[in-house]
Picture 1 (cartoon, rainbow, N blue to C red):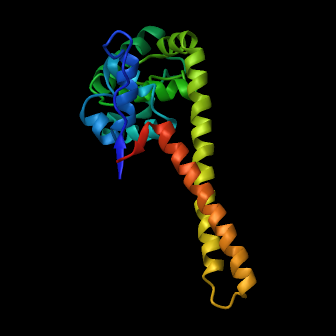
Picture 2 (cartoon, rainbow, N blue to C red):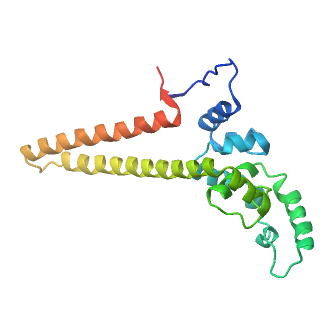
Picture 3 (cartoon, rainbow, N blue to C red):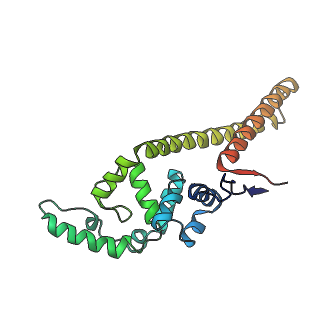
Amino acid sequence: MMAACALPPSPTGEPAEGDIARYIAGTEPIDGLVAGGYLAGDDGDLVAQQLRGPRLRRALTHSVCHAVRPDVNDFYQEDGEPDDEWKQRRARTVRDHCTVCPVRAACAELALRDDDTVGIRGGLVPEELERRLAAESDRVAAARAEDERAASSQQARIAAAAEVQRLAGQYLGGSVPADKREKNRLALTESLQRRDELVAAHRRDAGWTEAA
């Protein structure tokens, strides 16, 4: 059984906004984040920044766009469309779709991670997305690197679990000679240890500890 880590203490005695955002992002499932309004508005930006790419993409299944399937052209300027007309049209799009979206902060953060500043994302128009990307370039780069590291870690855990299953099948085979079974047993023990080490490291990185 697992238990969530406690909110980290602050030197001032009051947790900082970033600490609270990390805590919420690390302990709440996506459905809970959406239901609690944690992925909308300014506070939502702080929480969304703590999420890895796959969770951001899962959050978009709760978006207004996912629910109503608007015309994708609403989010882009058409060829030859005058700037004034486009600005009026995109303002309506932001009002009708983005402002009421419960995951607009996740949508905007994912756009920054993907370097996608062409259309409207998370209620931000291209100029706003570009300004944020420039202002937060170091943070976004670090988030991308962490996404890659998390994906590699997941692949390593999957591979380790598959190896345990493979070796378990060999070890349990009734026709395997005794010396071969002992060799398989040792290999299986090593694989189990490797798998458990990877899982334990993932739990530590995710902010989880073993329950007492």
